[in-house]
Amino acid sequence: MESFTISVEKVDEAGYQPALRGLAHNKKQETEKMPVVAEKLANLDGGHNKFLESMILWLDVRAPRYWWQEADTFRLSTKQSESTMHTLTAELLAVNMDEPADVEKFMADNFEPQSCSVETLRWIHEAAQEKDIITIKKRLPEGFLQTRLWCMSYKSLRNIILQRRTHRLPHWKEFIRQTLAVIDHPKLLPSLERKRKTDS
Ligand SMILES: Cc1cc2nc3c(=O)[nH]c(=O)nc-3n(C[C@H](O)[C@H](O)[C@H](O)COP(=O)(O)OP(=O)(O)OC[C@H]3O[C@@H](n4cnc5c(N)ncnc54)[C@H](O)[C@@H]3O)c2cc1C
Image (cartoon, rainbow, N blue to C red; front, side, top):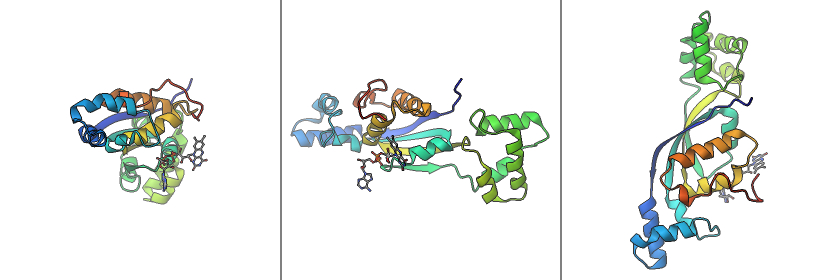
């Protein structure tokens, strides 16, 4: 059975009304009439759905580093991550490696299931005792969970959904499902289910 971790929390979103105002300029009409126009244009790439670029979203996402590596290829967005340099050593040193409950809690809080053995954690802990930050980072498994604030436009999110909704890594589908569930205007974005030939 597959076991993976990803969670999405919406921190904020903004720009819907300004985006409609921009559409109204474009159409020389009143902003109040624009929600219907926005829904019609949202799915039309090639310039028609540029208003989606004015709608900005901030998401707090917790996911393993191997997923973040893929997420980083989406360049039209910005991220602020938890620091492994500044906080991890102190957090590791707070773990009593002779206390199974302590070890279990640290593993559950910081790693995807089955991604870090107790032996590996002990190995990382040894580096923490030496205050050797580089060795800690080198020994961290790919399943190490990191939270990042990911800021993107609806246009960037549209691109992500179209490219990743059928991706082999199940995190992508789950990321899209959770995100569409918390944002204010999911109707302006592709759904999770619809498939296109261009899906990867
Ligand atoms: C099956 C598959 C395999 C992949 N394998 C790899 C891989 O092995 N290695 C790897 O590095 N990536 C890989 N990628 C990632 C891929 O190359 C893209 O970087 C990623 O999907 C982001 O897509 P994007 O460029 O549309 O998004 P974004 O980076 O968010 O860009 C959005 C839009 O802005 C444009 N844009 C972004 N930056 C610029 C710029 N500087 N100048 C002009 N236009 C810009 C883009 O062309 C795009 O139209 C893979 C993708 C797929 C689907």
